[in-house]
Length: 249
Length: 257
Image (cartoon, rainbow over all chains, first blue to last red; front, side, top):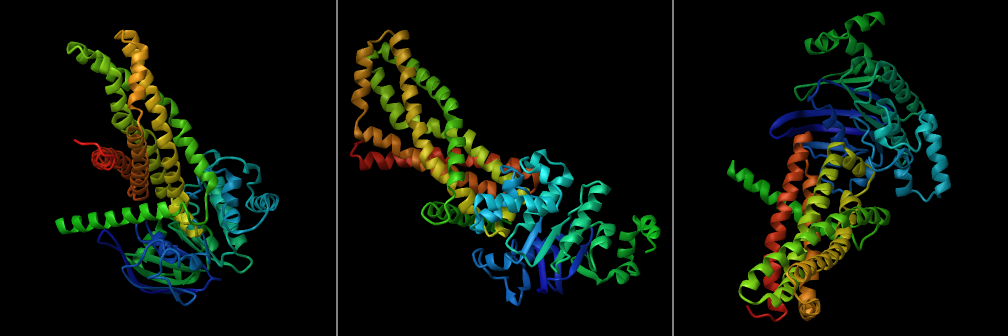
């Protein structure tokens, strides 16, 4: 379980999060919504201990990670697998080496077993043909799929974190990535998706948090999000209204 | 504002020392990234070979030309070999090679690590439980500690060949006398003095460039700034430490000034 207890964070005196509190279970499917610079990615980075809050506590399975050293953070970080925006694949490694990175680092698999496991994962995300390609040779959609494959190959995470998984993708690829995210959560592993695309959030998540001005303006289910009278949320929806109406939202 | 800047500077210095110490300690602590080290050695060593040979050759030739011209006025042309030898082995060789190494390898390190930071690749390493300093800094430190001294020796030899060409074929000095002068200056003190510096320079260049690269912030402009600062700071460090090391080595090796 992830618990934020009155967490505040500022970049160069610019308040990004102010006394933010919430609790998320590892099995939940959460979407964090909000515009650019509203602190969505900051929340993911705080969960992973990549940055430290200015005040407040962050508890992972009851364990306060706020004051932990880089070595001590290794265990709580192992509970997550993250897909960063743009994928963050290692440029110097090909697809196979990227996906096998964690397996080589932490498992005692032989090269044959690693090869087999990597192919299996790449088959799940449907990019097996790209196994020997370098990241710069991949399209945007393939890039994101390989990043998800690498996250899947991680050390049995309890929860997946996705940072803008569909940004920059065409609607078909975005749809496929959304399907993949939902499929991967079928075995009970939850996820947190950070996105500014309401349509994508509605496709994948069950719980929605809307961030603005450093605070969570809304934390609720699909019905509460769609029915919210909050002008900020309404404004966020307005650009999508024709599409939303077509789906009867 | 000034207090904030001072705080920032002290914090950066502290982080730099920590990175340098942890990077160095990584050499003797598990896990060892053997393949990364070999890859870095190939990039830094084999990749820099041609440019080091080219620059060293012309430095040796230019030095020899200048000295031959000046010494012939005083009727001391035969001292060219000795002065060129001492200058190259003790001072110019290590410094020139380190400066070229900074331009090629140092800038490469800073920009590569900087783009890894901006592309969240370093964060990904941390999430995977991999220490970025051990994975990214230590192999580069090992590579520089091995390759810069080797490149310096190669550079010295090529510089001496260049100066030999000028002294013998342009300035018409005796080939035998030139080489015997060089042999005279190939003492333990001179060779030690010249081959000790590249270890320190290599360590400094790598640590500065890794630190600047890993501290990159703010997109492509930040990357440009980090790379420029890495090269500028490395050059300043090389020149300052060259003076300090020369002073120390002269004292330790028993030279009187």
